[in-house]
Image (tube, rainbow, N blue to C red):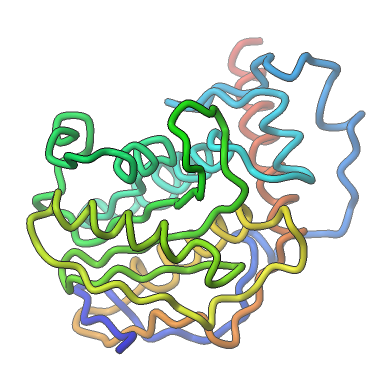
Length: 260
């Protein structure tokens, strides 16, 4: 069963999954000269609300495996500039660091003070990392996405290299179930679009999160039945990377204008 009854859902139009501003997207290549000045890897490139992106984070967004910080930026962007337009929505985008901490703790209830208050929450997005060691910064080799419907008691797992992260997705669902005090049924969506290389998993997480949040949850009409399947959807990872960089550059230039 892959359908939810949600308070704010409209029927899926089944359009191919694209970056958020795909209508304005052009194939102009992004060059180092245009977008990334000569900075050390750990130098700050953009401070965006609660996220400090480094030069290394931006370089990874362009062509490599996404860092925790890059995914945290995308969640911050979706929260601040998309989710904020729906004040009645009770949806949480849990940051990668908190998702990892939740997965690795033996007592999820001990994290209550560090995590958002989930009592009114309807849905929780969790980026899932396969890192096994809490001592390794930016560890792991694969990202996947867990979308938990607290209302329906279902945890949907989207893995672009299925079933690579299934054990980690199940572990996160189990820990979150204990924290919420209610059972969660785990469903691995085996029709999730699959990546074609070894570095796009984080981009898939970002674009799937964007699509599920905006096109499935926020734009739905009351009492509509919504398919959580991604069957037939396509993910433009290359276009997604470029769109993320464009958003970063726009916010950076906006900051520079404010300081001038």
